[in-house]
Image (spheres, rainbow, N blue to C red):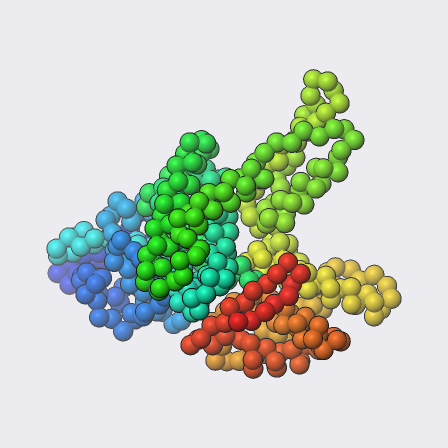
Amino acid sequence: MGDVGPPGPRLGADGSRRLRVRTRPGHPDFLDLPWDAPLEEWDSPRLVEVARGLHRHVVRFVDYDGALYALKQMSARLAQREHAMLRRMAGESLPVVEAVGVVGRAAVAGGLPDVLITRYLDFSLPYRTLFAHQHPEPAEVRGLYNRLLDALTMLLVRLHLNGFFWGDCSLSNTLFRRDAGALAAYVVDLETGEWHPRLSAGQRRHDVEVTRVNVAGGLMDLHAELSLPADPDPVETGDDLVARYERLWRELTHEEVVGRDERYRIEARIRRLNELGFDVDEVELEATEDGDRLVVKTAVTERGYHRQRLLSLVGLHAQENQARSLLNDLASFRAHLERQSGRPVPESVAAYRWVNDIFEPTVAAIPESERGKREPAEVFHEVIGHKWFLSEKAGHDVGLSETLRSYFERVLPTAEEEKTVLVNRDGYMSYG
């Protein structure tokens, strides 16, 4: 059903108004679900169990030909408000789950609550599931803590740059996707969110403080539930998140004063921001009173420099760190082509060859039993890391065929027991 106008009524056999259903084009109409019963009482063949976080509302998941949807039962006011906020956040290119529709059930017998429908975020995991496969050793837990904090910090900064006050940021209200050894965070629950033209310093501090308390509390619960080691300490981890946020916010928003003979510092600043995954919208130069100094004001847009570049070059969608990894491999492949031919190779030509000769054969080699468990870009990132590892060990370049055979036989995690993948700054991958 189209996403135009107010939710339309569904009539019962006696002509009474029963449901008001609104869904976006390209999704099911969901009319075959038992809407006249509370979600907690449903017994539909479409129901599935997926990895999930903690929710204050009843949430069920349904499957339509392999596409999963989350159904959250809540009041009509909250459902309509959250649906509108999710749509706006998506329009601002912020990382959120996709809003699909709202089912109004006020006219159903018993005055049942409304239901917000969102598309399940493929390849995502709640934070508790990330820990479920870890050996409870301090170094492993600390490494995962670091990746969680980096992802949550990046998410909160992006929201604040766009004038969004979350009000209840927590690990439970967030989903995480693997992103080339790191994690990318997505907003799931934003009932307390507010839009502002610009957040004040006080609003940001309040949002960060709420996040600090929620993260510390969530990790305390996790420690008790999984008997994790005392170190790292959950309270200190919450404090660490605040410090990371302040460092990142300062790097993204501070103004610099440079001399007329220090233009190189402008380029250095832009490069640092790009490495953090942010595009630079504009650089404003203002002459100061003495006439020999310039003020650099960097306006930072959404995170996605490498992701957008990969998409424009080869048409592939990927997370930011995945895109950076794939672009590095593309650059290496282009250099290889130039060495072979003895002449420069246009980037567009190298990109076409790389997709056809390297990326697509790798994706095609994924065993049928493992498809759908990880994004192809994440698998490719791990494959090229494994190729480097094998080549370093062998003392010569190991071909793609041998790498794929080794990776899919010995490295690719199974559904029953996942392996932790750690990547250092030089691209070395170890598997535990």
